[in-house]
Length: 201
Ligand SMILES: Nc1nc2c(c(=O)[nH]1)N[C@H]1C(S)=C(S)[C@@H](COP(=O)(O)O)O[C@H]1N2
Ligand SMILES: [Mo]
View 1: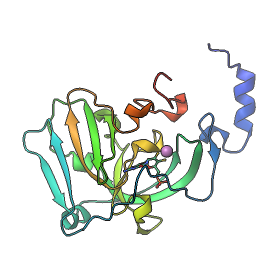
View 2: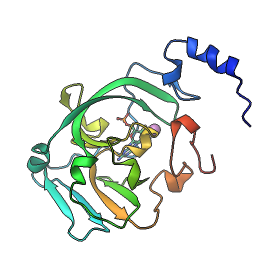
View 3: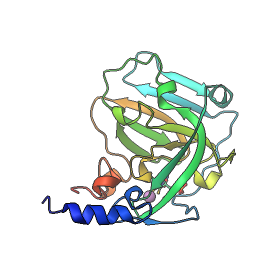
View 4: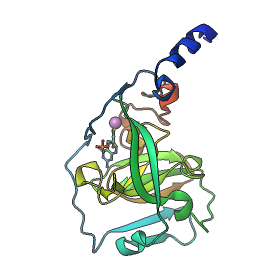
């Protein structure tokens, strides 16, 4: 290992944006849809977002309460494990730092759960310090149902399967609980810069 010479790295940096594209990925301009099942259409009158599990008093917001939380607009590159990447996607939503304000927990892990039974797991530290959001607008428009509307996760520093669509909550876990793709052979962590696509990568 460690066979990447300075010359090789220098050459790659000459290519426009090469430093932005993780290994093995290619750029797309359109916005592919990747869903493991049908598109859920939750009723916003009964929709809630919760934080539960290892927390003394679970937190829960209705859709109206969620929209009233301080929101941010962020522009990020996203990377799907099926090898497409898309640069400069713009989203509006609430950061996990805002959602976790005042939360005390002994948990170091989390599981995100969604309408349609999709789950994905992440270390708690990957959700905080400006790394993750629950977003409800894409390019200034309400998030399309196929892309996870009414609200989805955005965790752009990991492969995009870690960004659960149709998110309904986060469970704080003491132990890691592999989610839907993680129990189907995909990597437990999913760092695109280390090409952690499959279990064992
Ligand atoms: N609930 C749910 N979230 C999901 C998925 C899914 O099948 N169900 N697919 C994941 C995968 S593999 C990717 S690449 C992105 C795709 O998001 P998009 O359809 O908006 O491109 O959503 C992720 N989140
Ligand atoms: Mo994906």
